Amino acid sequence: MFTPKNVHPYARKVLTRHLEARRRQLALPRHLTSGPAGASASDYEGMGLDGLTESQVQVRKAISAICRKFPDEYWAQKDIEGTYPNDLHRELANGGWIGICMPEAYGGSNLGISEAAVMLQTIAESGAGIAGAQTIHANVYAMQPVWTFATEEQRFRWLPPIIAGKQRACFAVTEPNTGLDTLRLQTNAVRQGDKYVVNGGKIWISSAQVAQKMVLLARTTPLSALEKPSEGLSLFFADIKEEDGVTPRKGIELRQISKMGGRAVDANQVFFDNFEVSAADRIGEEGKGFKQILHGMNAERCLLAGEALGLGHAALRRATRYASERIVFNRPIGQNQAIQHPLAQSWVDLEAAKLLTYNAARAYDDHVEGKGSAHTDLGARCNAAKYFAAEAAFKACERAVMSI
Image (cartoon, rainbow, N blue to C red):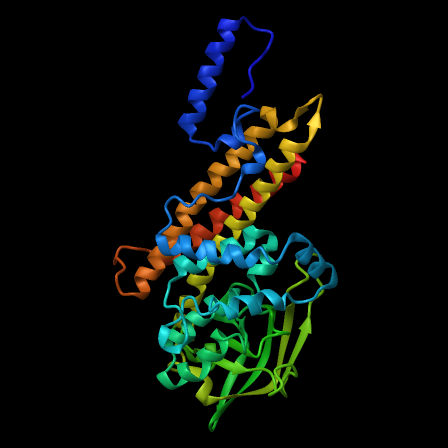
């Protein structure tokens, strides 16, 4: 706690009492606002567990134990080398965590996006960041429309290998010329007997180099022949590798994009040239892919919000530790309000983002379970959570850097 030394003792006492009362009013963590009399800044342990369900708390503890096997040096080396963090994926698969949101009948844990968001937040917060989260990110959200709309035969064929970690999936929607305008995507799939022939391209497809399966959205009816642009899109769960799980199949090219950061997980341009997909690998009814894909996108928004929370708390943890250890003029810089206040504000923002994130995740789970309210705008909640958590995380990272 900062109090001026060149004031009357009584005035100092009153000011100290006022500042302490103000701290309690704001309910800020003591380690972000106190001096030597309070807890050390290095005691900061990230997001508090208040507000989480018992299952979420158990997930956080279990995932934390796994992540402790992968220190900061591991992630730094992976980023420098640009090599995929297969070790984390393997550990998570061995623990059954990849199937966290999938039904028990296929090997899953039958939990929800609420628990999955905690899992992804914990991974990102451990120091793994987005690179660590992306090792299983798509295998959680992208599989939501797969198991929801697939037939029973397809579920038993597709889900167990993903859950066991024997196969991985990537998510292919974004295109170079349409961006977020999904209804006008140009990749087309033409039915020819018992197969579809796909032509076109996708961009920024993560993990395509290591994935064996692809959740692919393509147009099966020309836009000009439709009254509603949301129709005529179909969803596929396509095999993109040969039986060795490494070699791309005929008709598909995976071109890795060089990045400045986040190099541990590949991002790709994907080109389809008469690429064949079995009609048996179409998910649900032809032409209904857009509504199906929204099921996965809302889940993705919740997971991304969780990952952003993890990044923000990781930044605060490092900043508070540094502020307690860095000595200038014979005192830790963390005793200065110019350091304390921005970090404390970011903690408040992250707490607000946590409420928004887990409220949206719960609403998503309720919707899946058929318990959601007809008055709930699920898309708005999930989008708001993703936006606000990302903004809070960015500010926390920026302030952490400025503190150093």
